Length: 311
Image 1 (cartoon, helix red, strand yellow):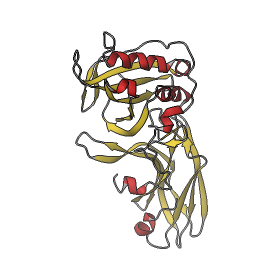
Image 2 (spheres, one colour):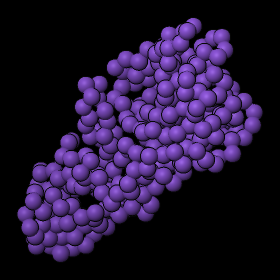
Image 3 (cartoon, helix red, strand yellow):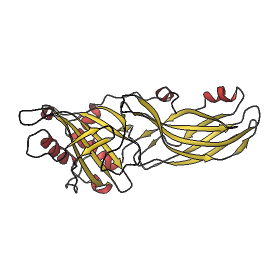
Image 4 (cartoon, one colour):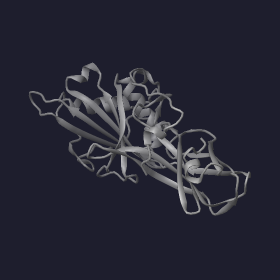
């Protein structure tokens, strides 16, 4: 994507930049690779540095939102780009393990966008160019959990990023993703919606569930939380449909006891959690109802309009 703003910042006839990804699809913990291709303008230009950053939009506690840069790497230091010269700067950018998902089973998650931004500094003037879209797909361990929601008849509602941290979970990024689902009919009387959050690292992940429980004759309404810690390999062989259904039955008040309680504050989740080893069985991994019920977002060529000019 050639920088349009750079022409305004450096003047017509200045250098142009095009960042080309080998593959725009990547999973959390993976690597984005490609080249930053530069073409010199009508005169020599002293480049201070070229940097790449991952940018997304995060909801704040005051109901506003802002573009957030959550990872950054300098891929080239000071050099001179000669007039008319073509130069390619190869790069490999590791993607943080907590990077939010934007695509599930081939469908774009409505409400989610993530971009790779190329930053060029020339003569102390910094130009943050347009973003190239990046599509983040689930790890096999995450896909096993998502497939279980489809097997249970849940329908995707929306996804967003919330500023803050989840208490009791080791979290590196200053925000977390919430993937929201409508429950199937047999749970809808007790639960209005369920939100799923992954907090992932190289060894495994925390699966955090938040259910909005409706008030009933023998219990009050409100949010109920559950938390499962599991390794990636174990997660692929856990019967998540059985585990999630059991927990939701308890949340809906069909059985005694509630494995996770808490209150939702401005900095994430507070309260109890539920942890333990995986249950036997293999998740089929079919998209099923989760994709069929998705409100699909449009596949877009650029995301500059979404992020605007926020830094």
